[in-house]
Length: 379
Ligand SMILES: Cc1ncc(COP(=O)(O)O)c(C=O)c1O
Image (cartoon, rainbow, N blue to C red; front, side):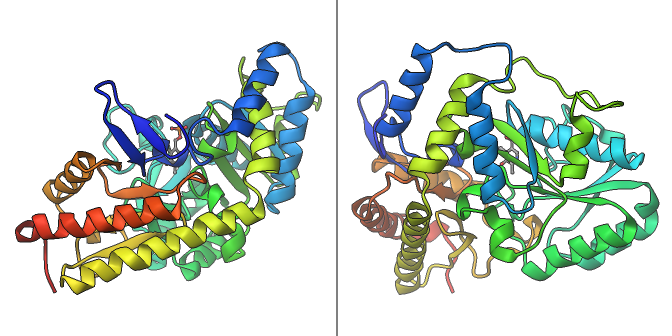
């Protein structure tokens, strides 16, 4: 892979609109990132102790995310969410966490199907409908006194690229406060949408934020942070500290690359440009669909677009009417024409995606709508 392109083992090339499920935000083999990895390798991979690169990355994150006064590192978004939920339980002394139907917080906390066999803490989770504050209140009226935290993706990623209404997030903030629970924003995917994450765009401050994916520059990464008072409970130099450990929590490669990525690659200008490119792509895709009277809605934000073959964008996963067959057709037809997209219909731009890539995508997409018109809904 290089820049915005992938080549498979059979020699077929694809323009990449998957970009490692959004983690490959910097594009493949970005020269600045490659140089950072090589430089780090030359100085030793793992030190078994604190080092300056983790301090630099921690400072970058605290500078960017106003709600993050202190941050701790781990190795994946899943781990960040599990530790954040555990911390909420430990500091509140309450057992339950409220999450949302269709939410995804990692391989051990997947609520796309709340019965997922590998999920942890199954009996200590409660669920409400996304973008529905009345339903959240209903659940909290039943079990608010035992609820340690509400965990929410400000934009449901795996659940369909569904953006939370600002009013919904504001209601969660108020409800968490009223019931004495913490509010956790899972920004593993959405952190890349603005310099301070989605929370900055909506101006709502969670108590804890979890991070992952692109903030590690494309390498293994997880982090969680928030109010100093909460994160300081994990500070091993304090009496009665809650243990949070992990051999590779501050692995040198990720810490170095994360810092270089945030300071030299994911600049404010670069984020604005990629989001603007995403908005332009969204507009063009909707235009070719409208011209063909194909029902299409595109949810998501900026550089992350989620395509649904239905007239109205879903407000929660139950409103998704696009069928798995339609998604499969789209995925396979785009592959056949040289575009790598995730099967679930979300497309992720990277900083290496060009206007020409987007234009070519729109033309091929128009062809897809024509080729499979009989299988797609119309207005
Ligand atoms: C919103 C969200 N949270 C958490 C995760 C889990 O991150 P990881 O795959 O690094 O464990 C993902 C992964 O897709 C995600 O989309």
